[in-house]
Amino acid sequence: MSSDPGERRDAGERTAWEAVELFSDLIRNACVNTGEPSSGHEIRSVHTIQAFLGESGTVIEPLPGRASVVYRVAGTVPGAPRLLLIPHLDVVPANGAEWSRDPFAGEEADGFVWGRGAVDMLNVTAAMVVIYRWLRDGVLPAPAGDVILACVADEEAGGEHGAKYLVENHWDLVACEFVLTEVAGPALRSGAAAALPVTVAEKGPTWRTVSATGIPGHGSQPYGRTNAVLTVAEVFSRIAAAGQPVSVTDEWRTFLPYLGLGSERAAMLLDPNTLDEAIDEIAEDDPTLARWIHACTHMTLSPNVFVGGTKANMIPDFATGELDIRLLPGQDVADLEDHLRKVLGPDLYEEIDLEPVMDMEATASLPEGLLWDAIGDAAEEHLGTRRLAPTLTPVATDARFFRARGIPAYGVGLFDDTITFPEMLAMFHGVDEKVSVASVEATTLFLASVVDAFSRRVAAQ
Image 1 (spheres, one colour):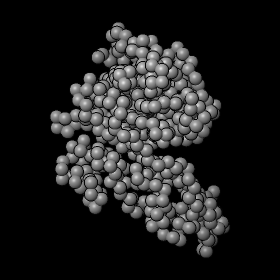
Image 2 (spheres, one colour; image 1 turned 120 degrees about the vertical axis):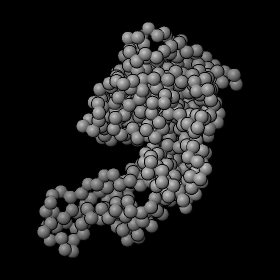
Image 3 (cartoon, helix red, strand yellow; image 1 turned 30 degrees about the vertical axis):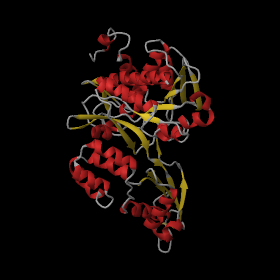
Image 4 (cartoon, one colour; image 1 turned 45 degrees about the horizontal axis):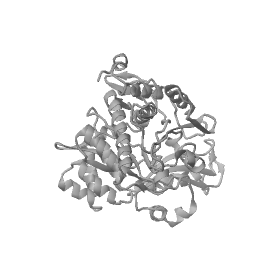
């Protein structure tokens, strides 16, 4: 398909050029979520979507500018299962000096759309908005059950002002029986066989703030003082130096064969005693894949923020740090506390305060049922195979709010072969995010097939 927008406009009613143009517009809106309540400004993309659809939808704005918008196409079968499409509008910050192109220009060049949020997840956001319009306008057959589109704020900072807010305060708007969201990735190829990764599970974000107190005094006389900065620094140092707890989960056992790493290496990656050695070997050739495998097989603890002290000649009496902690399926807070007590030792553990910032267990959906089968139908249509690779992602998505209610939630898309699975992983929150024009169009058509196949399966029940 041509990458020229002018040519694409004449390609017919059910082509996906419009998703590419909307995708670029969403990148240019620069809805950067720093984690501060005043950031995000997702209202910009809400306005873009409203203009694209020519429809206001239902806007929910818990804080000024932190807006989500919800639309609905009514189903034709009373009481039929409802399908929720829930993409997010916000992106993480980007340092333009590190990029080859302006991260917020939404530039189309060399067959790609470049920009922050390209893979996470504005490509899928644009696709889902277009699919809603096709359903509303009759380009796709009317669905059996309601199809809901909720373009939400604040996913990149935990969903407090987005999906979580909708689930807890406006459940009537997003109540459903099945969910499609992120993470989407390129096909996995082992020899001649291809398998489409479908995100079915994710680790549980269990973030903690570490705080310590000290005895203040003049910086010229540190003897006998307790320095709060040094206490938190020691906590971080011990965490970083310690090994991170290994867990070989059922999700990992199911997914591993799709990576095509060979039987010997696969055996090492299933054995807790040899798993880290195998990861080190993989890192020699593919550090991105090694990093992802490590995250999918370990409780991870990453000290990422440190604040302490007021000026150079004052011994600090207070310091804080922030820990990004992710739990695998089967791990819980008790496992985390046991690990921290062991790593820090009883004296240091009792000296600090650990305050929960976010406390969610890992969530998972079984790879079965109406929506799973519909994804298989679409994969067979577009890839010529029904091989679906149930995938655990180490990142948190809005799917967890629905899985926690027992609602199956999956993330999927369709990419061409211009980037590999590890290359896609490297672009999440990284430099030079880009998605090919062909992939945006393919994802739009693929997800349209999923929605249509789901409706047909529902109607046939």
